[in-house]
Amino acid sequence: MTKNLNVQRYVFIVFAVIILVISGSILQSKGSSLDNNYYPFQLIMVADPEEAYQNDHIDISLSITNIHFDEILNISVEFDDHQDLEFLNSSIPNLDIENETDERSYPIGNLQVDDYFLFSVEFNVTTDDTKTITIDGMNVSYHLRNGLSSYVISNTVAILLKGEQKVSETDSRPTPPKYDSPDDSIVYFAYLFPIIMFGVSIVVLRRLRRQ
Image (cartoon, rainbow, N blue to C red; front, side, top):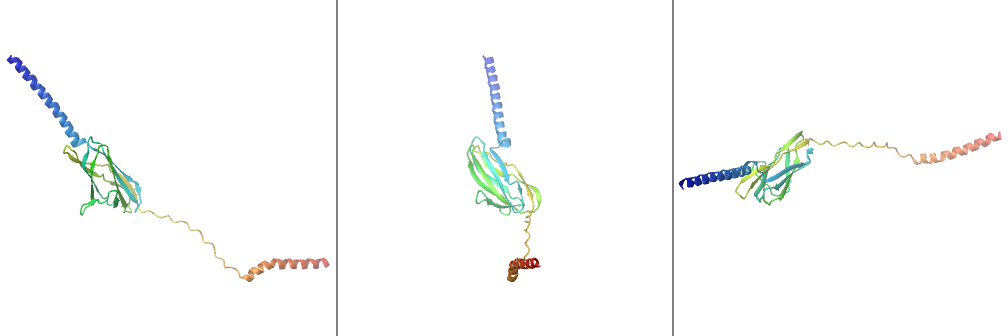
């Protein structure tokens, strides 16, 4: 009887250990995926246009899509101004600007499952240099209902700055030469001269016939 009781205890202990190991592995895999490799957003940042001259305007747009299985809370977007670009405006008014920095942030709020948010910023190109610049990704911070809070950084975009735009000089049409209008006497003479010559030729012909 005692031997059977010991066997049952041994089987129970082994079974409990197996359950704990499996449960621990599942919890560890979930925790690591949320902490390290899991991204509740799909972030896509694009620039339009991707080539610009000095004083051209560029739109930087960020699409935020909730691909999590639950609502995402307290979403905010942060980005830094680029030294070659001047901030003009955004699709969201009243952006918060940190004092003495070029960092801008805006709280978006909550985002439902499969819902998306489109955020855009307009810049003016201030430099006349010819070069390719890289716009750093925007930082999107968030909270999940399980208490996890973290952030995701979007992709970067490259913009070709083409320097100062040279205005092509249009070929001006050659100005026609100026002619002074002739006197009225010259105009009358021009009209009468053929008639006079015709009369003179008739007189000359008659005299030739008489001879």
